[in-house]
Amino acid sequence: MQQYGLLGYPLTYSLSPAMHNAAFEALGMDAAYELWPTHPDALPHKVDALRHDPRLGGFNITVPHKQVIMPLLDDISPAARAVGAVNTVIRSGWTSSPQDCTLNGENTDVYGFQQMLQEAGVPVQGARVLVLGAGGAARAVIYTLLQMGADRVLMLNRTQEKAAQLLQDLQAGERGEVVVSPSFSSISLIINATSSQDPWPGCGLTSRQVWSYGQGFAVDLMYGNMLSGFLEQAGHHGWQTLSGEGMLLYQAARAFELWTGQAAPVEVMRSALMRTLRG
Ligand code: NAP
Image 1: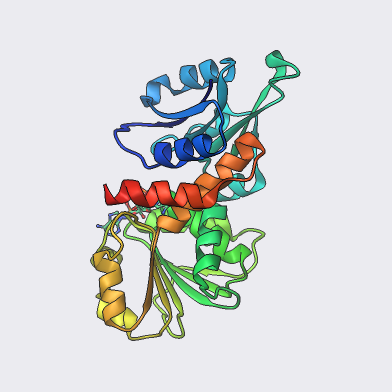
Image 2: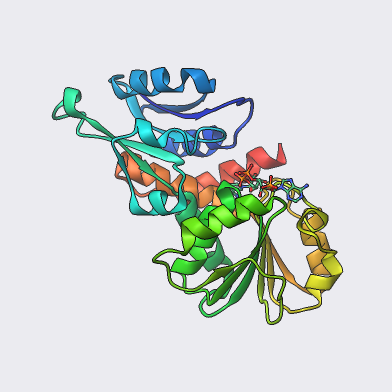
């Protein structure tokens, strides 16, 4: 049986096993996806053990390993390098030469976020976008928005130093423009990429100020709470709302395809995700 899994710490709950195991079952594959809680001190040893495990199919990475795993891998995709984080590892060359196989890092959050916006019909080309947060998710979001042709991305974060670092990392060589700015006029897309449902005070604002500057879509990357406090406010002020389940689904579907070479049974995975979320 092929083994797939998620490395993170602490790791008590994830929706990924439900999605991937449903996909394996639907395609009749002899494979299983499990949680592999891994303390940061044990990460190099765990990655080495996985590299040489004949049963390995592939694995995902979550907090706190998304950045620190990068030097342990042999190759990093251009998107993962630009974002500065890896969430999916693909092993290649194993069947021809187990000694010389390589572990390749990818960031499928980029694809997941893009697919979610496209499926929901959120216009990005030429848009002015406000992104709240400067963590791993915000990095993938801003990179994707620029790839999709956003005109301007304004970013606010509670910790200024992290915002400045993100700005420096993502600015070079990208289309569009990323600025840390209090000028909000003509914004048509607001994305909450923080882990708070009320990110405004931390970012030095009251929400009412911002909702009244424009109209459009409000997106909260959080999932499992279809109408978060953030989205509730947005809806109250006439904005269309979207929560992060689609991103979670499509990042998993992309990882599945990279690992197996088969088209992901997206609707099977979506049903498993929604069933698990409903508990
Ligand atoms: P992270 O790297 O830990 O970053 C957290 C961000 O939230 C930082 O910018 C942090 O600001 C900010 N923050 C935390 N508490 C805040 C508060 N009370 N007020 C204002 N800002 C606050 O986490 P992440 O990986 O980027 O994830 C962020 C969110 O996105 C989480 O809710 C996660 O579940 C979600 N997410 C969803 C998907 C999906 O597939 N839908 C994928 C990835 C992440 P500081 O810099 O000041 O600490």
